[in-house]
Length: 337
Image (cartoon, rainbow, N blue to C red):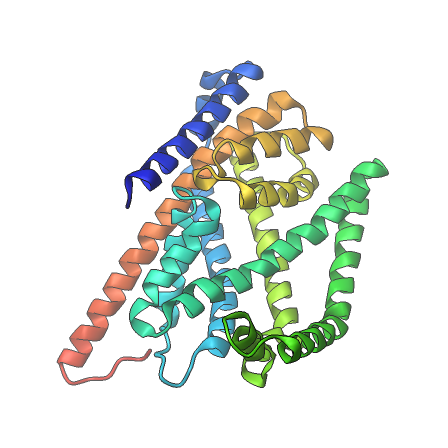
């Protein structure tokens, strides 16, 4: 790592810390209150939060493997499911110490380094499957905006989110066809030399365009919607564990805007940015700042602890599984992949 990158990481971390300090001082948050909230968390509540992290990792793993099965060539080796699952858990943890955009990409790119074409499969596959997470939060952001505009409640947000999700699923076929026609036209008129022309022709051929099939897009979108629901449940579990009185639908309506803010944040794990956004948007939906601000800080602590706990368990499980495979193979047996 170069000195410039180290300085950039340190400066972005400092920015996140400054934002947290401003949030605490600006709202006169009692640190002792946050500590008391954290003390209320039982091991059962924390274990539930770790399990929900596991559910998020499972859904993300299924999305990535769905994309990787299309990107993988016959000469590339197929990663085991447990390995993919562990890489996802580690990537989630890295997303808390690196900018969110880099955590999962880094983990999966390194994890597929010896399995063939790490950048297209690790980085490219991750970015493609995560684009459906972004699509999901954009859809739900519209639902949140409509609810705010018409001063609606839980029923309006849920109805708008469901209707817009169905609209996306219905529009998948014509949208994919339109993109296919556009790619075909651009590939036809693009110059034969250089990088753009060959890349467009690669995307427009049958092997490249298979990623844009309606069936795959629908599956990735549905998995992203379910993943979003689990993320909201994680936030609600934290609120319940700490005794913060925040309605579930407030968290669901605020989460899309927080995700978008985190996606463009430069601070590690969107430190400070997520807390500012969550507290502000929750206030718009009716949660008092006196409740939302301490909760966002407690959520950062608990969420980080649960995410790293799950990543450590995933890594230990992967090491144990590999040791068992090596032992069985050393004894002349076979191991299931």
